[in-house]
Image 1 (tube, helix red, strand yellow):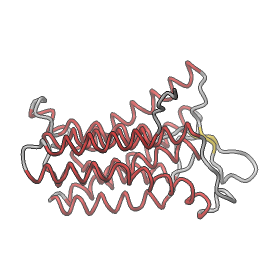
Image 2 (cartoon, one colour):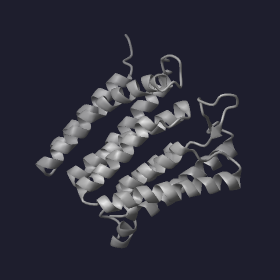
Image 3 (cartoon, rainbow, N blue to C red):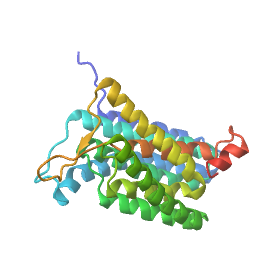
Image 4 (tube, rainbow, N blue to C red):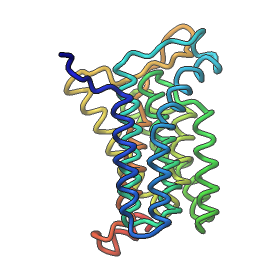
Length: 267
């Protein structure tokens, strides 16, 4: 008798059905509709991200041909998309449906950047620029266009200055044009009010990544594939920025926090 195996397809189907069932229990019809959209977006996001991870490096000239990813990387992609969907449903408990759907777009783009940073050591502008543009459009649609523009400018200036200072003091390559653009895109999503908390969380995450690497000697630095003679080593910034973005989204409207903490987070 064969033992049933838990495959990625089984996990996706079970998680989608569970999220659909959860959505039917929502208090209002808009929240239920938003939950169903998030549930159906989960398996679609896995396929879209897999296609982007396979074809975008070839289209950008990073790799000469398409390479099939190892099973471990596919598992990481499914886990990342499932985490984004679960956090989006959590946001739906105390956040308006329109805001939650906008945040879900930001988290999916951040997850895709994390996957690229881990696999390729590369943050593609084809993902960074839409993330910045969507952040500005979301700010305009949700009524905080000025804060989104201010957050993007603050991310560009302060994020770049912080990475530059870190590169000088630690004598490592912490900074590139893509890293600065990533901070600008995240600043557009969190707004000027929430940028300071995001900067603190992302900086703590980047310092933690460096500390883990030094204590465990894990290969957490990434080599830029496009370098000609010598590989350019850099610390991955997508994961700390994604964690900072997620924490600001989760905490800024949390009813369990005092009003002054929500204010510091831009809520």
